[in-house]
Image (tube, rainbow, N blue to C red; front, side):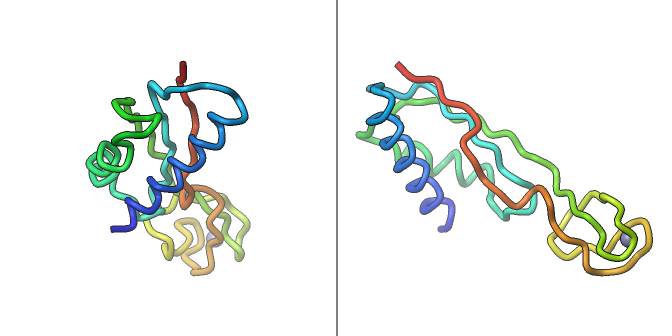
Amino acid sequence: MHEISLLENVLEILEENAKSQGFKQVKKVCLEIGMLSCVEPDALRFGFDVVMKNTLAENAVLEIKQTQGLGTCKHCGQTVPLETLHDPCIVCGSPGVVVTQGNEMKIKDLIVI
Ligand SMILES: [Zn+2]
């Protein structure tokens, strides 16, 4: 399941931050997930408790914020909303919309002690 490897990446980042910033425990993790990233929020929630067990983020609360897909049309230059990675431009109908937002996952916020 690809959500598990994403969560393992998140855990690595948390551990590095814990070292550099000197915190011991994570209370809350706020993740921002693009709608185009093919990540299932439910699968993330389910995997979170498993991956974070016996780590500094055990019992942390996971908050997921989804960001809409956006792209710029190569043909007409408009910024258009995208529901999938390969949607055509809704303004001029041409394919070739370059995704500018919505296929990333990042840690937006952390609450630590
Ligand atoms: Zn267009």
